[in-house]
Image 1 (cartoon, rainbow, N blue to C red):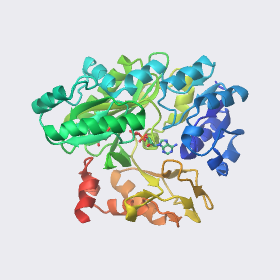
Image 2: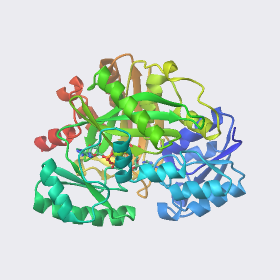
Image 3: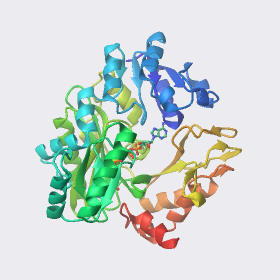
Image 4: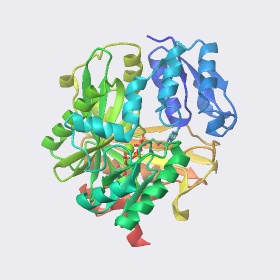
Length: 448
Ligand code: ADP
Ligand code: ADP
Ligand code: MG
């Protein structure tokens, strides 16, 4: 097992990883930017190293500086968390070339699955259904227009390197598609340094269902069931739950098996998520996330398996210590992403000093956060400041519990998404589990 791990991230996920390492008897090195210097969780790290100024490109994205910190600090592995360098295959290569294990899959698997068009091709070869669309990156927009006519509008233009719900545009006709390809390519070039785009059919009112997998270096793959992330705002996840309230057992089994086939075909190891859209009983692979995800706690709650510890143990070469038959589902878990955003101002980020922070508690309640009274939310980073997770025997009980917790949760004067969740947890459609990825946008646009 590793002796010392460097955590190449910040915020709630850095603290989450730090805690898992401590329980495994592993020392931690936390890196931080000047902007994050005051973060209280840094006091819990065995070592903390400043790696530069606030903007991520000058600190959390400085791979050479991070690897140097790991070398000087004698770390034998780096955990990248999510975001930042987590899906950067070159970074994974550089770590391993320096004799430091990257806690994640092989760089080859990251490259293959990180390119969404390549991942689609691999899925097709593995007999995993994909959304009808173009093959590979679009080189000739006229070809894409021809294809769109065949599959039928609306279609969606997506960046091969896209992530976080960005770099996607819907087109409703040929003229719109030409424009969308141009604009999406430009956006993608600016955001991801890769202007490659492809076109897919825009699925009507789908659910987003994703499968959590663990694969070790000894050929074992297990799935930890699915998460439903259909509660989204502009293609970004807000609420995630496990199990999905909208699929039957046969669909669940089909999706889990498909994800495992794809995992095997990609020679994928460590923790990974395979995302699907579900319409009726049909499901379509959309992309893989080659890292731990924000919403991993709901899976931990229903399976009792600590995913971060599993990532570390797999990276250290341990064989999976349980089989598929040992993975049992228990109850229902729901997570709300708490973002420092102002619901009254179009969800603009709301940075600044948190003067009051009173998290909820009680049976089956988990709050994953690094913030506290007196914490200053920086405008430099993602607005996610924490996650509220509840675990109960049934979805109905989880909803009741979440309602209570949202009522107790007090954060101020910083604005957060808590009031939005209080509204969502009163919506009849949500309560019945009758949701799709456009449900929130439709519901709230209709109200304003
Ligand atoms: P998806 O990208 O499919 O939504 P996740 O739900 O795991 O997958 O979300 C990851 C997203 O979280 C990133 O795309 C980014 O927008 C955001 N993010 C990245 N790094 C951080 C971070 N350190 N803290 C908070 N949010 C982050
Ligand atoms: P990202 O890398 O940004 O997470 P995804 O490919 O996972 O991108 O898609 C994010 C979300 O965008 C999905 O959960 C869904 O809501 C929407 N979406 C993506 N592709 C389609 C599609 N073909 N039809 C309908 N919605 C889609
Ligand atoms: Mg996604």
